[in-house]
Length: 150
Image (tube, rainbow, N blue to C red; front, side, top):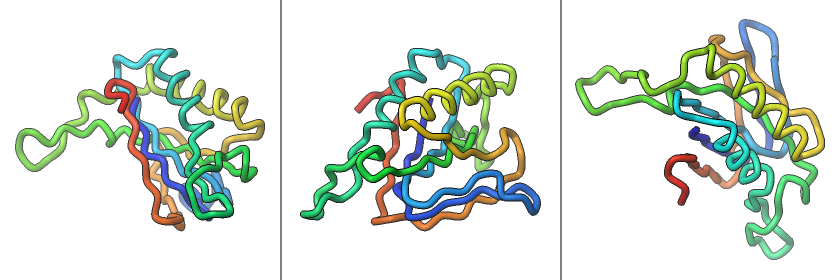
């Protein structure tokens, strides 16, 4: 699993003309799922996201978590995080999980994050043409990969 976590002051997802998810301060999480991903990958990543301390304290240091600021999460499926650009100029996406594998893991991630942060996680619509709007705070953007834990 790969995730791009962006600290935001606001973010929203629109499909056609309908807002499917909208948050104020918190994280916009772009989530990519590959065939090899398991529930263990999901659990590790969910814990990291929910407990990540990248919000500023009173001294301007990144010491606060989502819980500390009563923050929110907007979760967006993003198969393009597994783009292969090795050959040619057109990316390939063969590492990205097919919907029959990815959708259940995406739904499980949504539930797990909701449980961990104690509130509903906002989301997009899996496989839809989504328009994402955000105001990146900092900017702070963190990349995580469950197969390359740094």
